[in-house]
Amino acid sequence: MTKHVNKSKPKPKPRQKSNSNSKLRITLKDFVKANKRAARLEEIQSHGRPVEIWTITHKSKKAYDRNRLKRTPLTQDEG
Image (tube, rainbow, N blue to C red):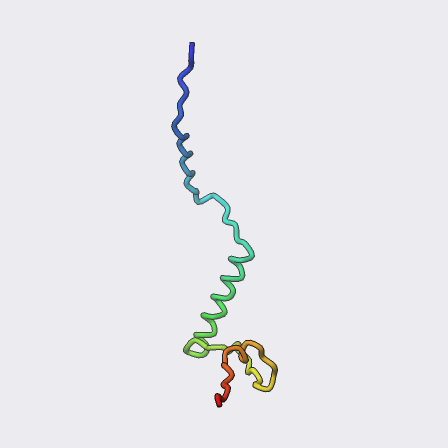
């Protein structure tokens, strides 16, 4: 006797629905995100508008910068 082999893919198990009794896991990432959001809302309420923070510092033109030198082509006088 030969057995019939089912070659089709197995059906995925249905997902269990979460009940209200299940515990919620709060990760560190979620905690930080919630604190940032709360701080921003508090800041908006105290100032009446979102406050912008400039994070780019002034770059001295006297400092050596290889990339800036590469961007500006050197001009040579023909003659």
